[in-house]
Image 1: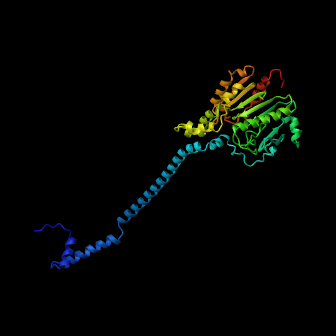
Image 2 (image 1 turned 120 degrees about the horizontal axis):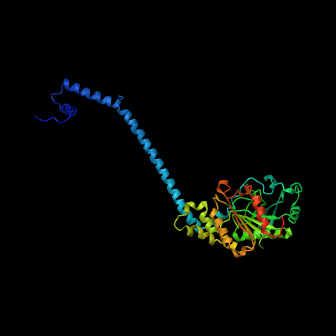
Image 3 (image 1 turned 120 degrees about the vertical axis):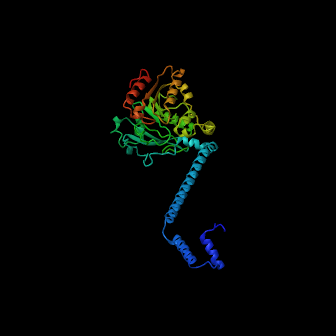
Length: 372
């Protein structure tokens, strides 16, 4: 007997096609049953339909996940490419580095009129402009003592210039980079807008800033008579009667390496070559650590321990360089730290209630024999 290995339905179809005599009522019933089951599989509801829907949902979810991964990979490659490209861009275009140092294009606050210092609550202040050289204009705010508040109302530039020869000492305030003389943290002091900042005209450079600062200093000395003139420099820097440095650094290379902007590149291979060498090759040094060795006046350094822009240790290091210098042997050198709990950071030392006392004591000792 032949072993029966084929399915019944296939054998039935073969017999039907060959006209086998065994095809009869039983075969017809079997054939009808097969067709019924086939129709039920094709058209009837059953467990196959939800399984198909679930499979389709899984495919759509996998497709969305793959699309998201693809987009994330594109973003990652773009960020990585930008990270690698920036050092080469700075190396090839050192002018970018100069822009990042001076930040004179950041003219905040944006919506104030620098010609109207009274809008910032400085009702005893006059705005005017000095011109140290052709095509260079320096915007200046001249603030007189508050005891002259009433007398100063409505006065012109000539009245303010004459006020320089009064018995009050004069502070020439040179603000740091970024922003204008109308910045919130600067409106409490006499403001001088250096070249290229605010509404000043010109392109900033270390040499130009030095020249402009000396021009303003000389301009004041001509009009101040015997009154002492002190220089207050914030962050950036004929000797004055005293020099006050707020949050200073040693030199631009050490400051650039310590700046928060350099954190993501600090351990980048060739950091000095990519980032620091273009600065010095552009003629920017700000070598305060060398300059303090040649200063012949009293020096006061103010620095907050929580300064995130110019690290506290750079101000302390500058003091340690200046203190033993022979040029200071006849003058006072003082370092005043402000504890990090006070939250003064880089630009809020003026909030210290101790600051007036510190200045009075320092300036009172800076010129022996002079009464203040």
